[in-house]
Image (cartoon, rainbow over the protein chains, first blue to last red):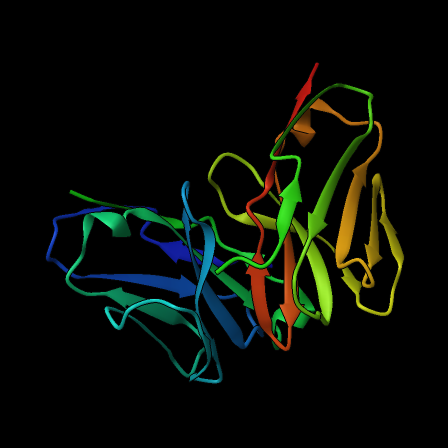
Length: 113
Length: 109
């Protein structure tokens, strides 16, 4: 079966711009979570969506937002980009939640210059 | 914020040796999971152990969980060069999944 697909793989943006990242989960998976990974902070939880509803949220500013569509595909948006937003953004899907174990995508590498 | 802490931060061994990584956490959990990550790619799910389980095996992997000490260990037996990666523990508390900082394992051929 197809894995979790994240697009794009790499992105370079300028400070102040906004960016949208996309994640297509494994077919049948209804839970999608997003994580930010940086060398200094490690893996930080952003948010989780289930059936188009945000079910959990981490401690990130309101510039970070997301949504999930009826086909379970998810997008995350970061507005007013800062240099510190440079990171690997990982999407993970599961059938119903973290208790199932996650399948991760390969990530989107965002560089803010 | 992170929940688990892995120990050691880095581990270097020879092929064929066993590798043991430890994870400590702070709050109660429903389950604990171990993941592997190769060179900044996505994480791969290795094994899940529930809070009422004490030990679990999967191929060359053995995971233990001690909820009284809030700790877990991952043992990789007969390591191979292909096991070189970062290993993360993740704790699930009511669908709130938090990852540790990881252990960087290097297996020398």
